[in-house]
Amino acid sequence: MKLTPRLTLTFVLYAAALLAGVGLLAYTSGRESLRSAVLSELQATAIEKQAALNAWVEEKQADIIRLAAAPAVIESAAAVLAASPDSPEARDAHDRLLAEIRPRVLGGEFQDLMIIEPQTGALIRAGDQFAISATFFNMQLDWRLFIVLTRLESNEGVILPESMTITEDGATGVMTVEAALATPGTYSVGVYIATSKKEVQRLQRWAESNEPVTADTEYDGVILFRDLAVFGVE
Image 1 (tube, rainbow, N blue to C red):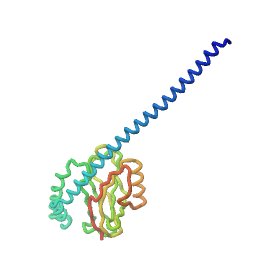
Image 2 (spheres, rainbow, N blue to C red):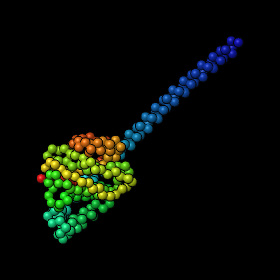
Image 3 (cartoon, rainbow, N blue to C red):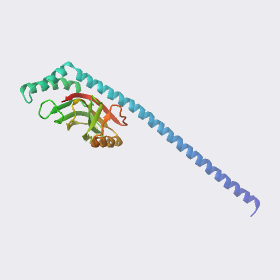
Image 4 (cartoon, rainbow, N blue to C red):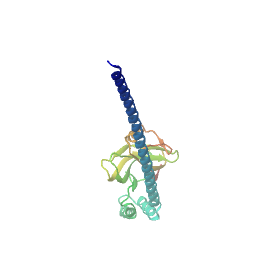
């Protein structure tokens, strides 16, 4: 073979190898740049959504606090508790309470009413079985609702084993669970809404193991509604 064709072939091979190397480097660099840009955009979106979600939660908590502190609501609730179960006075007080609450919560997106009522209609005592009900609005598909009872004296809460999975976007309904407390004290009621599969599994595991949770427990993907109601156990 003559020298000139050999040199030409050698230069062509070197050029092809160089071009392939430059192309691979450009592809790798471009892929990393695109990946970084996508991650940055997702992170910015997540931060924006988190801020909006926190603001929404704070707004709803403030609404609940104002509702619970309203003198007319307090007076009507006290009348319900003081009246004999199933009596005309109890029904009248119950109707007045609903009349006070409904205008404030219609169209809301949070647990609007928490009712704790022993089956006997009497004061809750340690070991008594009682029902807790919560009305919810505008929940999202696959979210799961957990009821949490926190003993204020120890600041430790327990997640009740019964939970409720949301089966459609924009769901509205009522969640009712049964509970019994062995330790006397003052308890607050909260609703924890797990929005991720990871947190659903974690909260369910805690509920089944009766593992206590505290106010400083950290979550990732849980909307917390704390202190929706307070009650005593003798």
